[in-house]
Image 1 (cartoon, helix red, strand yellow):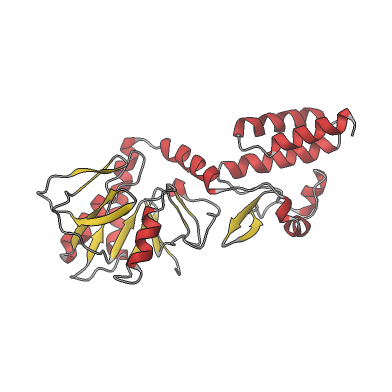
Image 2 (tube, rainbow, N blue to C red):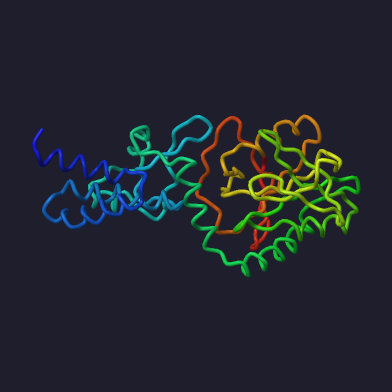
Length: 293
């Protein structure tokens, strides 16, 4: 193998990096070199797709992959890109790229958590306050609540959409009980949240009722998330507390699972595994989306 080939392989490897800065450097280098080196056009396209996917956006050409339900598939592709445009960048047609999906760099939950946190961190406190009121306004007529319902809210971390105005409005209208999650070791429980009760640290920077508060199984779970997609897949923090708890509740109260989020947290697709628990609906400041989960 000649020096030129090794140099090209190194540049292509850089275009598939997990580091967005390295991907951007590969893209800039390929753009400079492609007028004299046709292979560099492919690297430029690879890096462009990689940068978009790492940012949680649709790719343009069809070179990136993602695991969903145990199957490797293409990361979602911008429908406006044609095979003619791909050919200009020395790329194969989308059908062929789909057949070779196993060779494409993978976009994982780790990548998407980084992208989602960056988006969420860009929200200002006043925006989140306004979003919470809009989420409550959208959610009150959308969430069916029985008088005997137990509604699980959560104490939001910085940047998280706040479910408390919605939870309180639903409880006031329907006479439902409220609970908050409390983490102890690897276990998460839901304990009754009374207006006059003093809250205590409940794990990971949140607050919740004391250990003396009654433990209850919720029939509605307002859940935090880092990201969601159009199919109702939920991207959590990666600790698995909600997935494990929802799996247990599925055989008990079988709760309605409602994602509470800002609209900027929507992703083209969320990688899924067998243990992941999907959403029945998601409520953002823009409105309500219901899913078939």
